[in-house]
Image (cartoon, rainbow, N blue to C red):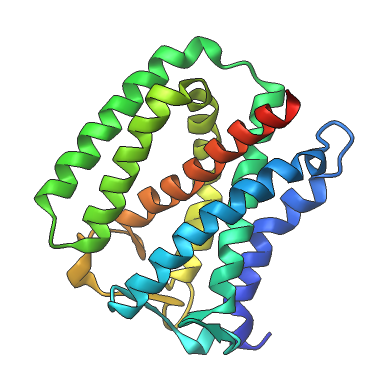
Length: 230
């Protein structure tokens, strides 16, 4: 396969199984598409604007060697697909957990985890204000976790379990995008703007960027699907 399809292949790898199983009779996730897509459009707009600004600021960039060469507002088309494929897979996983597991008894543990995360993220961000990828990501995630804690707390146990399930596939796909197994990374980071800590080739901040992306999508999905039921 030509190298230029690498990023597209990563996107497809993320969504193909969740999409196929969306029509399984015990899941029927396709019946929840209204809530998912309503949440997705609002969330993706926020992340795409963020992405455009950080790309123009030189905080990260995209390697044309691994993209098809179709760009819009400075982002390859595969990046726009990323904000569909990854949230779809993650919200699908969250939905499976909500229909097959009752995790309400773990609400107190989820609350403690959330407060610990908020404290860690806030302190780290304040110590690294000049490293914009670190500080912006951590402060946004800490703020949104605080919002969820006081407004949508019941979703947190299922969200954390979903994130745990997603973590390995996330590390695999993100590892490819950051250069694992490739001659060069697909997404290139300017280390001046991050902590420089890597999980293999993956910037440490990517874990929390991914958490924020998933949490906002899950929160919107949870709110809208419950609203549509009433």
